[in-house]
Image (tube, rainbow, N blue to C red; front, side):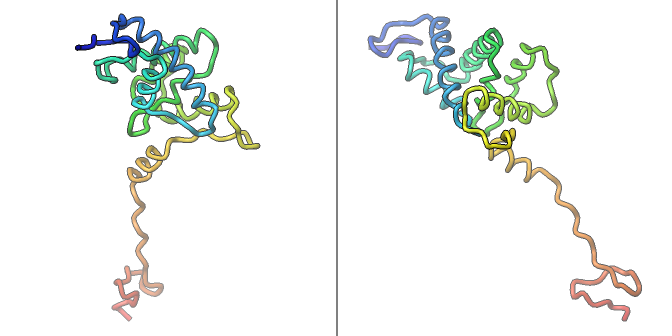
Length: 183
């Protein structure tokens, strides 16, 4: 028997997509609060999508990328309505960046969109950790970029040119031997 596009796992019955995304958004809040309880943790869209489908018992044939943004949009709206920190800052793409969808968080809050969305999200994650009871270091913790973003930025930084060694007498660049050819 072919299941509908979005269905309840327990009995295979169709679930209207709007109802499914509402259920997934409620489940996403719970998952993200759990993530926020662990200092410097985050979750990928893919893992969040799997967790919300598993916890609600509602699945979809639609690819995750076609519905996760709508679910996270509902989470943003709920967080704003309940005066919660930005839970969606905890959710990252496979490359560990927040992606352009994170701009919606800033728009809802009436904030200017910074050039560095990942840094803003790191600061918002720190607020989540504090608000939801993560064990924060005594000095108050720091906003941290995910490891893959740190690595990517280190690789992208231009490496400084090595300073050429000069002969102390004639001020000419020394050859690789370190011995001036003029002396």
